[in-house]
Length: 157
Image (cartoon, rainbow, N blue to C red; front, side, top):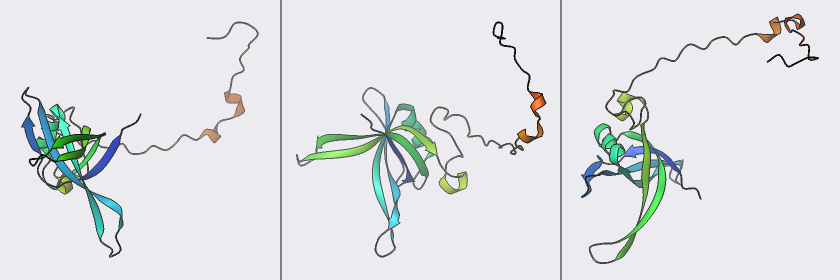
């Protein structure tokens, strides 16, 4: 069976960090993800998804993301049943985040250029991409550049 979610959107509100009774960090937040098409009036619609992150990922999200930040998440979809204050049975469907990444530039999303929760203490680094090198030309060679292997005896390796 396969349960994989990859989603990118903006935080609707600041993430909330809590601790379980055992001291495990858990963060919950909601993201808005634009739909690919506009409605009949030309307005863009958005879907809102609840996300839950645990342990280091939860701490990372609460430290580096705030309302309006663009965020990329991969994880799995999970449903759970609970009873509300009035005793009614409810179902919650949430994305459980495995990895959380910055998207966009620092000025546009409030985050860094790249990174994930594996190294939250380090400042995100900007890497310079080397200039593309010219591909080697294989048409410059001749057939004399290849050596004939005598295969009458043992293999040469």
